[in-house]
Length: 181
Image (tube, rainbow, N blue to C red; front, side, top):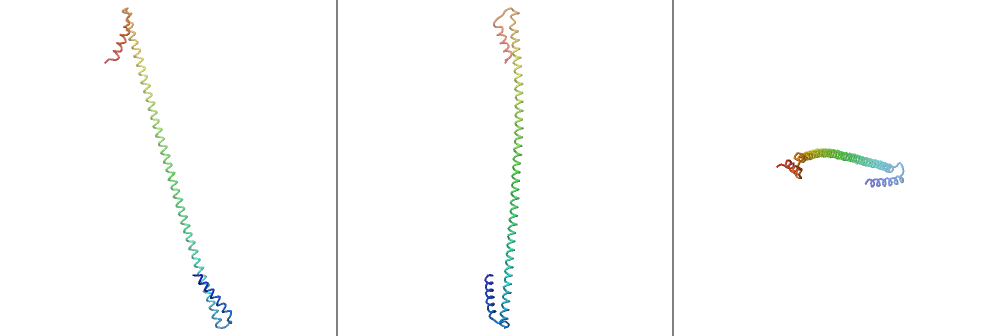
Protein backbone atom coordinates (compact mmCIF):
# COMPACT_ATOMS: atom_id res chain seq x y z
CA UNK A 1 0.00 0.00 0.00
CA UNK A 2 2.83 2.38 0.82
CA UNK A 3 4.34 1.70 -2.56
CA UNK A 4 1.08 2.65 -4.29
CA UNK A 5 0.86 5.94 -2.39
CA UNK A 6 4.48 6.79 -3.19
CA UNK A 7 3.93 5.93 -6.80
CA UNK A 8 0.88 8.21 -6.93
CA UNK A 9 2.85 11.04 -5.25
CA UNK A 10 5.75 10.58 -7.69
CA UNK A 11 3.33 10.64 -10.58
CA UNK A 12 1.67 13.84 -9.28
CA UNK A 13 5.09 15.44 -8.67
CA UNK A 14 6.16 14.59 -12.21
CA UNK A 15 2.92 16.04 -13.61
CA UNK A 16 3.32 19.25 -11.56
CA UNK A 17 6.97 19.62 -12.64
CA UNK A 18 5.92 19.34 -16.28
CA UNK A 19 3.16 21.87 -15.72
CA UNK A 20 5.55 24.17 -13.85
CA UNK A 21 7.95 24.01 -16.79
CA UNK A 22 5.20 25.31 -19.09
CA UNK A 23 4.19 28.21 -16.80
CA UNK A 24 5.89 31.53 -16.60
CA UNK A 25 7.64 32.38 -13.38
CA UNK A 26 6.13 35.10 -11.24
CA UNK A 27 2.50 34.40 -12.09
CA UNK A 28 -0.06 33.37 -9.48
CA UNK A 29 -0.63 30.06 -11.16
CA UNK A 30 3.13 29.42 -11.18
CA UNK A 31 3.29 30.24 -7.47
CA UNK A 32 0.31 27.98 -6.68
CA UNK A 33 1.79 25.12 -8.72
CA UNK A 34 5.19 25.65 -7.08
CA UNK A 35 3.58 25.64 -3.61
CA UNK A 36 1.66 22.48 -4.50
CA UNK A 37 4.88 20.90 -5.71
CA UNK A 38 6.66 21.84 -2.45
CA UNK A 39 3.74 20.46 -0.45
CA UNK A 40 3.90 17.20 -2.42
CA UNK A 41 7.70 17.00 -1.89
CA UNK A 42 7.15 17.60 1.85
CA UNK A 43 4.42 15.02 1.95
CA UNK A 44 6.60 12.51 0.07
CA UNK A 45 9.48 13.26 2.46
CA UNK A 46 7.20 12.77 5.48
CA UNK A 47 5.80 9.56 3.96
CA UNK A 48 9.30 8.27 3.23
CA UNK A 49 10.35 9.18 6.77
CA UNK A 50 7.27 7.41 8.14
CA UNK A 51 7.96 4.38 5.96
CA UNK A 52 11.59 4.42 7.10
CA UNK A 53 10.42 4.72 10.72
CA UNK A 54 7.99 1.82 10.23
CA UNK A 55 10.75 -0.23 8.61
CA UNK A 56 13.09 0.69 11.45
CA UNK A 57 10.47 -0.43 14.00
CA UNK A 58 9.94 -3.64 12.03
CA UNK A 59 13.68 -4.25 11.95
CA UNK A 60 13.92 -3.55 15.69
CA UNK A 61 10.95 -5.87 16.31
CA UNK A 62 12.59 -8.55 14.19
CA UNK A 63 15.85 -7.99 16.06
CA UNK A 64 14.01 -8.27 19.39
CA UNK A 65 12.18 -11.39 18.25
CA UNK A 66 15.46 -12.80 16.97
CA UNK A 67 17.18 -11.90 20.26
CA UNK A 68 14.30 -13.41 22.26
CA UNK A 69 14.44 -16.53 20.11
CA UNK A 70 18.19 -16.64 20.52
CA UNK A 71 17.88 -16.10 24.28
CA UNK A 72 15.16 -18.75 24.45
CA UNK A 73 17.28 -21.11 22.39
CA UNK A 74 20.32 -20.35 24.54
CA UNK A 75 18.25 -20.86 27.68
CA UNK A 76 16.79 -24.04 26.27
CA UNK A 77 20.25 -25.19 25.24
CA UNK A 78 21.64 -24.46 28.72
CA UNK A 79 18.67 -26.19 30.28
CA UNK A 80 19.20 -29.24 28.07
CA UNK A 81 22.92 -29.21 28.88
CA UNK A 82 22.08 -29.07 32.60
CA UNK A 83 19.59 -31.91 32.22
CA UNK A 84 22.19 -33.90 30.32
CA UNK A 85 24.78 -33.25 33.03
CA UNK A 86 22.25 -34.23 35.70
CA UNK A 87 21.49 -37.45 33.85
CA UNK A 88 25.22 -38.12 33.46
CA UNK A 89 25.69 -37.53 37.19
CA UNK A 90 22.75 -39.82 37.98
CA UNK A 91 24.23 -42.46 35.70
CA UNK A 92 27.65 -42.12 37.35
CA UNK A 93 25.99 -42.30 40.77
CA UNK A 94 24.13 -45.47 39.76
CA UNK A 95 27.37 -46.92 38.38
CA UNK A 96 29.13 -46.11 41.65
CA UNK A 97 26.27 -47.65 43.64
CA UNK A 98 26.46 -50.73 41.44
CA UNK A 99 30.25 -50.94 41.95
CA UNK A 100 29.81 -50.52 45.71
CA UNK A 101 27.15 -53.24 45.71
CA UNK A 102 29.41 -55.51 43.66
CA UNK A 103 32.28 -54.88 46.08
CA UNK A 104 30.00 -55.55 49.04
CA UNK A 105 28.75 -58.75 47.39
CA UNK A 106 32.33 -59.78 46.67
CA UNK A 107 33.28 -59.06 50.29
CA UNK A 108 30.32 -61.13 51.52
CA UNK A 109 31.29 -63.98 49.18
CA UNK A 110 34.89 -63.82 50.42
CA UNK A 111 33.71 -63.87 54.04
CA UNK A 112 31.38 -66.80 53.33
CA UNK A 113 34.16 -68.62 51.48
CA UNK A 114 36.49 -68.01 54.43
CA UNK A 115 33.84 -69.34 56.83
CA UNK A 116 33.29 -72.40 54.66
CA UNK A 117 37.07 -73.01 54.45
CA UNK A 118 37.34 -72.55 58.22
CA UNK A 119 34.49 -75.03 58.77
CA UNK A 120 36.08 -77.49 56.35
CA UNK A 121 39.42 -77.13 58.13
CA UNK A 122 37.76 -77.65 61.54
CA UNK A 123 35.82 -80.63 60.23
CA UNK A 124 39.00 -82.05 58.75
CA UNK A 125 40.76 -81.54 62.11
CA UNK A 126 37.90 -83.27 63.91
CA UNK A 127 37.95 -86.11 61.40
CA UNK A 128 41.70 -86.49 61.84
CA UNK A 129 41.40 -86.42 65.64
CA UNK A 130 38.56 -88.97 65.56
CA UNK A 131 40.64 -91.03 63.14
CA UNK A 132 43.63 -90.84 65.50
CA UNK A 133 41.42 -91.80 68.48
CA UNK A 134 40.01 -94.77 66.56
CA UNK A 135 43.48 -95.74 65.42
CA UNK A 136 44.76 -95.56 69.01
CA UNK A 137 41.73 -97.48 70.29
CA UNK A 138 42.19 -100.06 67.56
CA UNK A 139 45.86 -100.37 68.44
CA UNK A 140 45.00 -100.60 72.14
CA UNK A 141 42.39 -103.28 71.47
CA UNK A 142 44.78 -105.17 69.25
CA UNK A 143 47.55 -104.93 71.84
CA UNK A 144 45.14 -105.87 74.65
CA UNK A 145 43.78 -108.76 72.60
CA UNK A 146 47.25 -109.88 71.75
CA UNK A 147 48.31 -109.72 75.41
CA UNK A 148 45.17 -111.50 76.55
CA UNK A 149 45.55 -114.14 73.90
CA UNK A 150 49.22 -114.47 74.70
CA UNK A 151 48.42 -115.00 78.39
CA UNK A 152 45.86 -117.61 77.64
CA UNK A 153 48.09 -119.16 75.04
CA UNK A 154 50.95 -119.39 77.43
CA UNK A 155 48.82 -121.28 79.89
CA UNK A 156 50.12 -124.45 78.35
CA UNK A 157 53.48 -123.78 80.00
CA UNK A 158 51.86 -123.82 83.41
CA UNK A 159 49.82 -126.87 82.72
CA UNK A 160 52.13 -128.36 80.20
CA UNK A 161 49.37 -129.02 77.80
CA UNK A 162 49.12 -127.25 74.46
CA UNK A 163 45.85 -127.60 72.72
CA UNK A 164 44.63 -126.07 69.51
CA UNK A 165 41.71 -124.66 71.37
CA UNK A 166 43.79 -122.51 73.71
CA UNK A 167 44.04 -119.51 71.38
CA UNK A 168 40.49 -119.99 70.08
CA UNK A 169 39.06 -119.95 73.57
CA UNK A 170 41.07 -116.84 74.40
CA UNK A 171 39.79 -115.08 71.31
CA UNK A 172 36.19 -116.06 71.99
CA UNK A 173 36.45 -114.88 75.57
CA UNK A 174 37.85 -111.60 74.35
CA UNK A 175 34.93 -111.06 71.95
CA UNK A 176 32.52 -111.89 74.74
CA UNK A 177 34.11 -109.16 76.83
CA UNK A 178 34.07 -106.64 74.00
CA UNK A 179 30.59 -107.33 72.72
CA UNK A 180 28.56 -107.89 75.87
CA UNK A 181 24.90 -107.44 75.55
